[in-house]
Image (cartoon, rainbow, N blue to C red; front, side):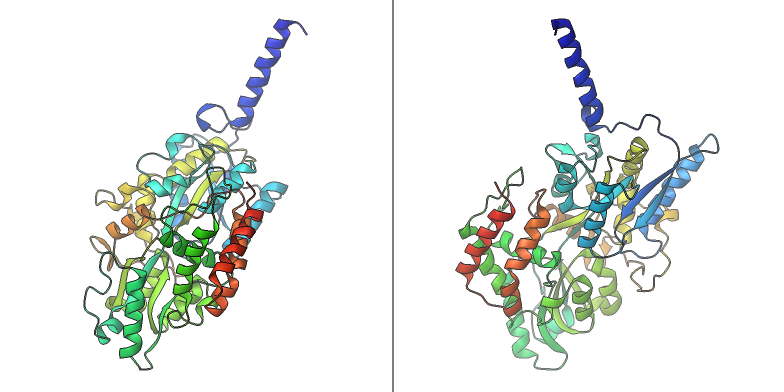
Length: 458
């Protein structure tokens, strides 16, 4: 082939690759002609209830689009809530995007799914400026994979410790019941005191959490592991396993302290978020590990008898991020929608509705959610949409400053495209320990190390 033709062929190939990957800076290329129409947003259930804050934010964006429209054609967004648990929603989204059976433009991904969806080519790289310096550090890290932004933090999450002030007072525990620097060792001391002093029907369990064989068990385990081994990652930047038996042994030892039958409710091994919250609201349990979304329900039941504190040790970061699918025919407009939904004003609305906001600016007093968005949602059948009680500093007992600090100190679960294999391995391997409250810790650590090496090959 002549040299000139070879150079021309190379140039055409580079242009083709640039078009396929969305061009420089991660800006998604639209279809040949982006036509006005409906941008479909697929998401899990909104914990703020029927007509929740996510829907109200989308309604606000739709109003803007109608005002900007110059003719009868305009863009609008429609929220589709997926049924089932988080694991079931992940399977639904993977199946739909891989098969093309559903025309989703924007998907709301759990923070642990981002590497998998990006690596599989199911979501597009996005402009870097969508995740700016205002996004809280650990939260911002969930947006990227392979040094590119694939999903923008929408609402965050972090584990908190809820507790019954009345039970602690009755047992003679002095205030502050959960002071700064509170540890799991001190929590176990409180539980022993409660057991000795409150031999009455109104006290049954020291604490409860989510240990059923689903993602809740992984979250609780990773919080124990990260507390026992500071800086523990278990995988490298490519998602390859980097752990060892000694790290796992220390993690297993810490988890064993937390699930010993004398401390934790016997029902915790069967509980998800709903089950553990229900057990706590029934009374008789002094402490609960739960997400911020549990606060409205708990405050409605206990009022001033409810205490809230950062989780002892390390708390795992949760939350959801918005991504544009590679199959979207309205990718550029879908990116504009994400910019609106994750902007400073929207994040303030999410915070006021009960979510943990992803931006530092949302936690200040300068921003307030517009009245047309902040209006209390219509009650849902389960009642979770009750308005969140708020004071000048945030929720009573749970200040905005406390929530932001908890997010800033939160740790990640392993970031890997094979996260599904990781979490299933951890859930299965830790089953005997969780079920019985005891196990041969050295043998369990060795078995877990071998299983993770198979699940996450180097």
